[in-house]
Length: 303
Image 1 (cartoon, helix red, strand yellow):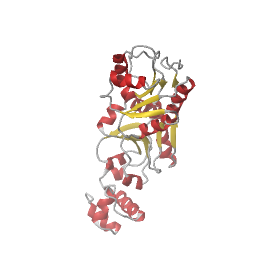
Image 2: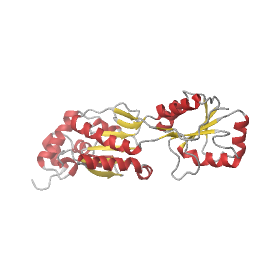
Image 3: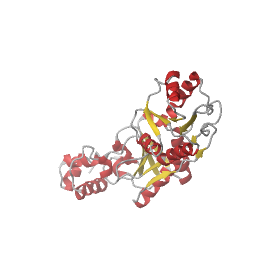
Image 4: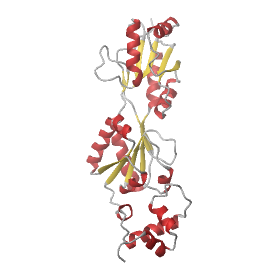
């Protein structure tokens, strides 16, 4: 036949050329299409030798994709290190996607980091796993149990006698932040949303004067909180206890801060193993990894 065109596929499959274009384009606009029609178009394209790598590439279960916007790659280096390590251990190759979702079909399955999985891709049955909690019940995911880890920190403070606690979190409404707040609310903490710019000595002194005995902060607010405490001359843990939901930045001076480990590298490895299972069996699940507690030295009993 020479070079096969979409018009040739349409004629042999008995559908319109527009239908062929929709199917081969991954149906990004969500056109209602019978599954039998979609499969007939794909089979016809393969049989005629249509020169589209998304159609011709056989599934061999050895090429995994990972899809995210550029900044997400920069912000999740430990996770990506775990993805790379586990892919190598399982003998899988990796390909990163930053463009159209249609390209993910070059892989046998794809990890999604940060951004939600597009509904039109899910509708095709393409194997996916989301790194991070996902509200769409169709999507398998791997995340850490932020709620349980945060609740354990509040329980630690309660055992030390703390009843007036301030929890400082950023205003952004991410799934992880919501889960941490859910865990914190199992205790007595009053939630304070701040970007850190309004934290100063006066604010800290006002809290202490109001009877606050402990601060619980997000990782992103740790540096601003520590500066405000130092400016206020508030000794940690002598005058106020301090805990971080996660780990403070490397190189932090002073006593080890109480909190918990966030096993980001383990999340990456677990996500690859889960994707391998989805590709091989079609069955996925939702996995939450435990965050090991860090006792630290910044939680003291209330005098």
